[in-house]
Amino acid sequence: MKGTFGSLALVALFAAAVVAAAPMAATLPLVSDDEEYAVFGAVLFPNKPEIPANVQDEALYMLKYRDRVRLDGIQGGPYMVAEGTARERRLEPRDAPEGRDASMLADYNAKNATPHRLDGAKLSRLGPTRYVTMIAEDEIARLFGPGRGWEEFRQRFPFQGGIVRFSRVGFNEDKTRAVVHVGCQADYEMGVAYLVFLEKSTKTGNWLLLGTVLTRIS
Image (cartoon, rainbow, N blue to C red; front, side, top):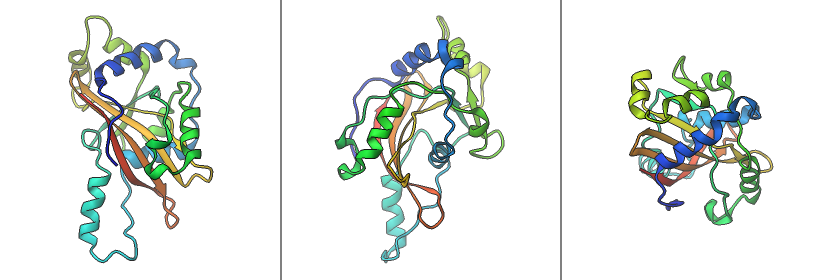
């Protein structure tokens, strides 16, 4: 999967998200679906891919797999996840691989029509202790207010790589496929974002990365 949504800098969108989300963060509806958090966890801590039975060369398959699901600039941790969900543009049929899963795109668009907030307790259970933390929108607004910025963030959180922000997760009707948007901003001109497609394993129930589309870079 190749392509981008546009060339807008992540830093501008990050600042806009802060302004929009901060005043109402405490009153936003909470994302409660455990399956969405399972998808977030699979993006941050990918489950081992399942190699199809008909594959003869496993090493070649893994090379192709890694190229297809690259999330450079996001994966690695520790992760600091923004409390509020990202508000991205609506997805169109051309955005899904081979035009599949119209219901998944419709679910994504419906959920992301309004902002939500993530459950810090559920986020913290996605990985090792203190490897995933949440930063509140009012804290982001304070850190990036007038006359402040990434210098302030580095003083407050010297060991964090940046701030990760998720969209809501769109599922198909039987919740076997999913799509989510994820971005990470680490400095004024150091950010990246992807649209991520996943599939639920029929063997383990784990969410597996199918492919990614780079949507922004700064």
